[in-house]
Image 1 (tube, rainbow, N blue to C red):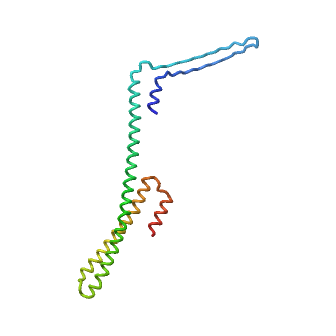
Image 2 (image 1 turned 120 degrees about the vertical axis):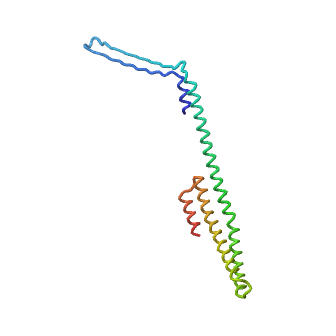
Length: 172
């Protein structure tokens, strides 16, 4: 817009004014006065014209580049959020399997402890492993929901419907 404005300053500026007046002292004569004015200004030889035009063009170019950079940052943020979401989604089955393995391990250690073939420390380590595996699985579930919300927000589509779906997923 600024570049267009500077280009249009090359054309002359024209102002016009007209005035008409009549005086009737008697009906046989009708004297009248008329005034017409036209004024034109043209900046011939303006030394700053080229510099102003270049400055406006450069500002327009910088604005376009800044907009492109903002769009690129938004794309990168969306892709990063999506990759984090996919990573959390892909690790969840592995962590669920780890929890199941830890449960099986604990189920095997308890009878051996009762028979005296395992120490209490081994049983406690198995329980600790189960607790850690379950904590990691719960952290992955939380990250899954968080990254889904971040991805939707970065894409600009986090609305009431999406929030309702996220809430329903959290209650499961």
